[in-house]
Length: 207
Image (tube, rainbow, N blue to C red):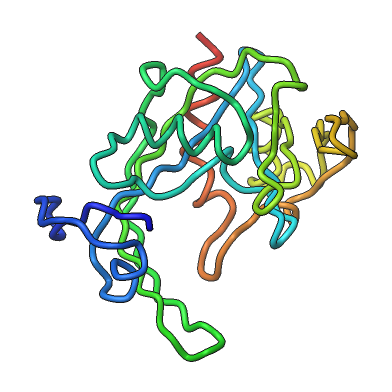
């Protein structure tokens, strides 16, 4: 059973409940959106299994009694198999997320989250990745500046380095991608969704 701390809209702690109850009642809780980047100015997106689209490096709920930084490390290890130092995670921005989703059985999931976006430099080897087969099929390394050009319609496609699991071994492959490869929800644009993160990575790696 997974428990989450919940808060009022101003962020004052109120207690904890199961994850299911938090979403059933629409209680405010915390999530993390985690991003890895390289010193070459590349940003790492995970490839979602359910939709085949690019999303955060890793992301998820902050559990009961857990710090934002601890959640950063746990989610990154769970989803893509990388161990990270929570003390090296740097905040990028904070986003308030409100979304109601109607499931196929008619049940309404009420999501009320305060999301912290964090980033940390990736210095490992492509063989270090160990993907959660239930959620992730791999990752892509993308030049952050070129992604910004893509989102600003300056280019229509770009190179991507894919790292995927093939029969228990990680495989590297270069492919061309376009803006349709990125996960964007209704009433969002790719630039709105990922722009602040890309700007933070570009700034950090241009020092």
